[in-house]
Image (cartoon, rainbow, N blue to C red; front, side, top):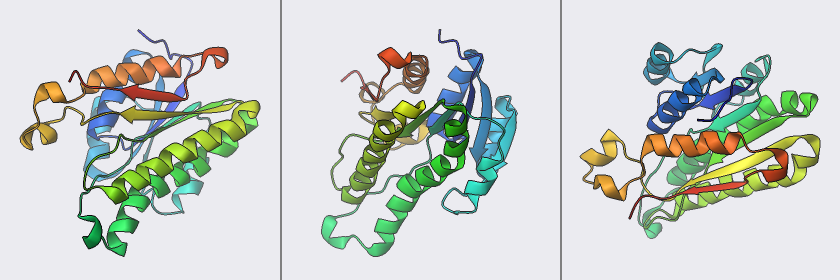
Length: 221
């Protein structure tokens, strides 16, 4: 089991399916957590997991940056906020475009702007964002997730000499959640959420001279 007892991890999207699996693994590994989320989902996470701080924030709002900067110290940011939508390419609208990029990319940008000054001050930090493998009839979703990957890799290349690293998580398939099972996806075609979280925790413990910049996790089939 990973040991993260000396780390403070800011986890966004708290209460979501992926964030919940990661939070359980972080808790088991002894990490201190700062939970960032919204409404009832955030409350569920708070009821289940201990946290040093809890922030109810809309990360599409630029005012969230200042709230995040008030957190005393963040060693790792794991950003799980995101959304998925499908549409025929010729029917996509500006509203669809903004919805995908605001939720998947803009929220990451604001979260990074919130924690990065502190990481640079301490010359230590790790930023993880969630991208995805390509899916059909999802051009805008795929584009927004490609932007996440490009942004995280660029951050890593720019900031690694200053002690800040980046990791892009690629779940290469649907995650096993009640919602996806209700949608008719077979359990063995989906990625086990807790197994995915264990992979995340393992990546967080890699030393600088053996670090991971991309983490691709696959289902069984």
